Length: 513
Ligand code: AMP
Image (cartoon, rainbow, N blue to C red; front, side, top):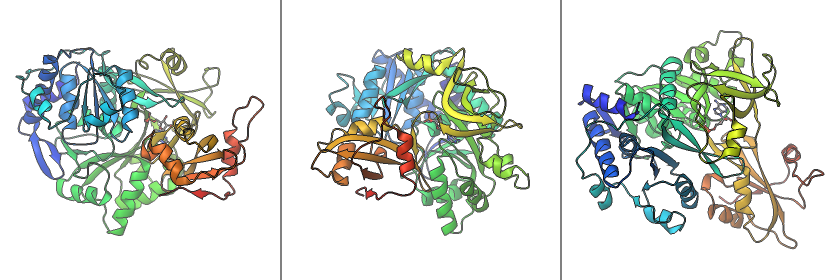
């Protein structure tokens, strides 16, 4: 079934129900939301884009996002949402890799200027081209889509630094949404999904269940995460639900505490995407009350591996409360979870191994990437690359990431892409990038840099080398100049030794601000 059916039904059943908000201002009701999506679909069809074609969205959060996303589905096509914070070069790589037939972009010139997207048309919402596209008479019902048709091509990063396109089918997205209702939170038409994190990722994935229930959708005027704005929106709009990375939770709690707010109007904060320190969630519960649910998932099994329920989080009298807060909860209804040994055989309960998951929410595979598929998918199981164990009560505990990904502020950063950017600097001979724990960001990126003989690269020029190639949020927060990198007999850099060097603290060269 096409996920846009949920929008069409909401518009049919409750056409006047409030749908899209920009801040506190209602932009349209469900009839208007569906009409926009249907018009975009008709425009795509008029351009020859149909079932199986891909259409990319490279935009920050905005009130046009959902009509465009659901317009693509309405046409029966596959959406390729690209994080609006990426560098235009990174986004262009995804557009080219996905062979998108068209891109909706806030800044089409930046994308075309990369020279990497050929003749792929780019249309900015609100432009004359957009008005022409949406002038075609709308189709009254979404195109047919099968359960296994790819609806959302979800680009994650790969260990090689190149993103991988996880093919999420219509069935995957529906399993994710129904599991949300079963394990995360119920949703009513009076609720409001607030998009404070990128709609190209977790926050946007939660649009489906809120459309299914005919709830409101709120894009903050700031377009992103401003804690004071969120507290104020919650007070006015009421029944706010949002997805937040642990760093966002921490900042929201700090702001709430400073202005003596208890988060009035916030119904649910779903957190996940990176490790949450126990002390931080305890403070969050003390300040904002039992508003939290944790989820553990990844793009390949969108938002749906395990969940730590509101009741578990609130149960402070339970003897295992703190241990449970440190876990990522129990398998969600549609997820089977196993812990595997390096030879992929299942390990007994309690032992640490790679977390594997199976269920109707697991992706069909990565687009055009047989090696990654062979690594990640075995006998119907998705190997997550995360290490963990299950306790006797079924709670899943994450230990370490099997790969070296850094999660800073809820965003994934792969060391290799930062290393490649830094190696374009003329004074850098070798570099190795790792993540190190940080109370504010979860982790920060640290670069160990071997300068070329007789040179001392300064942090600002190293920052410049990064921002020319990759998104700003990926650049290191610390640079440490070293005469050489520790290596094993095969010449591989020993990242474990680099991590060990960070405690006790060596003398860092602070990054330029
Ligand atoms: P992504 O594909 O961007 O959603 O990133 C997925 C990765 O984020 C997972 O494989 C985990 O390493 C990490 N992650 C997701 N949820 C959690 C969580 N609740 N706690 C700790 N790490 C998490």
